[in-house]
Length: 393
Ligand code: ADP
Ligand code: 3PG
Ligand code: MG
Image (cartoon, rainbow, N blue to C red; front, side, top):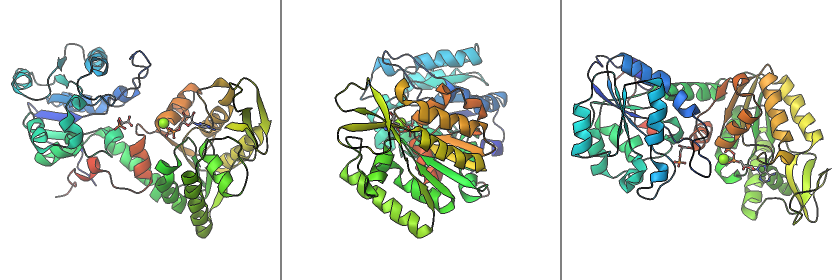
């Protein structure tokens, strides 16, 4: 078990470098559209402030190439100020004398939010001198950035090796909940996969399959499975590589004796028809493009979910961004939310879909991670977690 902030003593006056994941979703003009990741970070921040720490918070935002004012952390400091009035300052610099001076002037129990760490290319390179500079800002390192724990960057990995370290509450909760669900599932355990990225999700599917009783596949991913099983899919999204991957998954699930459910009908449109006219079909052929699971599939999936005691869901079941193709995703979200099953939802789009379906509160665990959640579900080790010291050493 990893050392957590609960194991840290004498925090009064200590400089704590907190790596958070404040990579918040933004709309086209750069306005923040969702603050869940800040809200989920509040317990860790409060805990450290109450113990008199000087909190230096570091995060990335987006994927900038060098400085980009549209991806500044400044607006996020305004959000923090709402929760901690009079206690938050912002630093345009991340390393160097200016930020060091700001830290020297900090009072106990206050926050300094650093600018976007990805403005420095050394961050993603995990450049040793940059990590050393970051380490020189603080006495203790805390990683609570679960969403970015699968990246071996200076602020998630390099700096952690140079300071006494621990994980925060958010990270602790994610690891505990997800590991427990995989290792000790309540049965029947149903795993639902959708979305577009078969390649990215293959390890997660195969690892979850070891403990799940039923695997259900929808979304764009389903067409690769249908093709692998010899069905036509018209012009729906699939490619040779993804079909080969699906074949591999089908074979392995077969060998494990696991049940795999794939769509039996679809909501489709004609290619080139601007998606205006939609229709339901059992077989996709010719110029048809599948964009959502159909009503019989919804029923098929719902019947399984009704019986389930645990459900893990990653990936929307249709092009849910378009109201014409959101029925499958929203119905399944509602069914999971109202079921007796312990439910976990992970993935940026999946969480956003659950939110749009107004089911957030009824899901037991909403994971803040995308890639990180999948890796953890896939049984892979995450550098940002690995680097933290074990509890009893
Ligand atoms: P998550 O972010 O939850 O891990 P993904 O990023 O893998 O999910 O997939 C989400 C994307 O998959 C959405 O943009 C959605 O429009 C797309 N998608 C789902 N079903 C289909 C489909 N039938 N055809 C094309 N795209 C789809
Ligand atoms: C996320 O939003 O999934 C994390 O913040 C990681 O972001 P990244 O994929 O740009 O590393
Ligand atoms: Mg996504």
